[in-house]
Image (cartoon, one colour):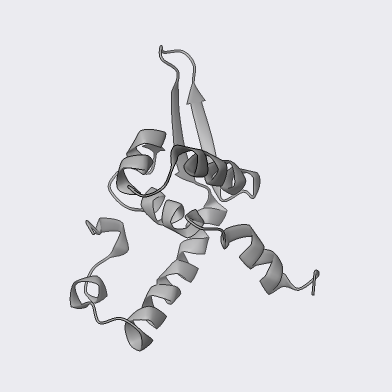
Amino acid sequence: MKDCTIYKTVDMVGKKWSLCIMHELYKGESKHKRFNELKNQLQDVTPKTLSARLKELEENGLVEKCVDNSVFPVKCEYSLTESGEEFLFVLQDIKKWGLKWKFENIECENSNCQRCQL
């Protein structure tokens, strides 16, 4: 099973908070978010876990970190890579499945996730 693509993919994105982080990076007008913006949106995640997940997502090519050290304090922003943006189609399919089989949420069903305020 170690060579199974599904197992490998789930191992890459299946850790707690990974998909939520990607979703938060997708949401809103700006494609770039700072660590504290993500932390504020994902209120229950610890800074240690958020940092670890961002690093893992970056290592797996789904998130990119942009550091601007020309200013003080150093400015660091995260955004989805092309691969990460494409993975959002998978998240949209997960949403559709959840709405069909598990959850009744008219507001979510009728909204674009990029503009989601939930």
